[in-house]
Image (tube, rainbow over all chains, first blue to last red; front, side):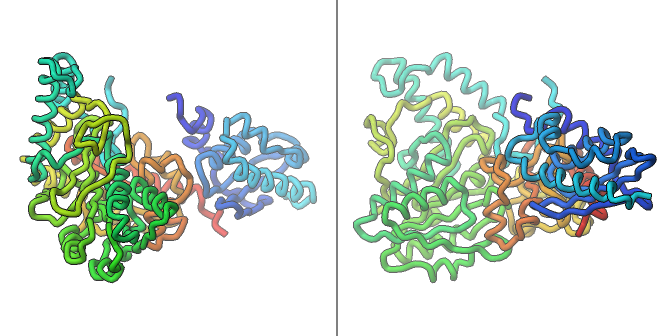
Length: 123
Length: 387
């Protein structure tokens, strides 16, 4: 459908939230801004992200963005999180510009998670 | 093409009845002439329009001469409200309406405010109904027009049109009713109801889109000034070449609706009962409006702790609305539900299920199950994300 507000990737990640959940003993960040609530948690091994999980209350773009982020950053170096940019997700998932603020909330959460991992608090 | 969705958005629009579609097709083939033309082809076209006027007049129990064809309820509302307010402006400039009216009504009143009219915006009770006593208290010596909708398009709330209309008559106030959601679905006898102006549109009762009508009571002091100019058609009230095929479709849709209003009503009541039975057990779910006294074709529910846009997507392929269809691209919470005192979050989670003649029990039971599952999944996604 030509005017579908959701790209195929948004639909895919919204429908298949394999990374929804929590991790025992993980580093976690909670954020509640702009009408959305997020929780990201991560475990690391040898400086690399072993597992990522999320919980989210928000629109389909936010939920899909969380799933996309988790599925793309597992196995990456922990420090890669501090360079995370909302524009990557906006572009990949074709998020409409009016949702930018919400994706920036995710960016804040991811960078915050990166800082906490970099701080050596990971198990 | 086989339908791969379940349509529960009949308050937004209904499918054209196949008999109506056939009637319009015939009309396009044999009655295409301009009905204002005096040749024989024009007379054929005109006869189709006259028959449709009689069919609609029979549904409303009015004289066909009191009906003005328009492009739909939005134009009827504009013509009825702005036209009547201007016609009576030499007597006074105070107008009364309800905060929960359709945009086609509220936006006209906003425009009139900018033109020097004074509008009293009434707030409904918590269940969406307007207390006739509160309405009476809002009237003043200079009040000239009131507009209250029959069936609310978002919640299905039905107003006491008879009581409100009687108050208007007592105070010599013109009474306009937006009956877009009521005509063809609720018995309306305009000989008995004290209504001066009534708006309707065909596509809400299985007729075509793009055609509606405005009823203007034939009584002293009741008239409208035109809002369109360009010809002398329709008593110089609404110019423009009449679309005979669409009008014929509206007429037949009215004729089909009349004998089955009670049957349709019972059908919808059964469907709404089943739908509500399927979802009322969900924690935090609540009805917007009044399930006992509301129009049974609409069930509007909000639910706590669930984000509305995600709920709508999760409900696919059930076609429902988050509010007024005209407003559904907006991310703003429904102004109608906000007027009832709902929080932004509850208003944003509102889903309007609206059923119609073709809706089956199986469809509403499936919709109820899908709604339960959607709420459960979205709550699970958010668990522990709560502050």
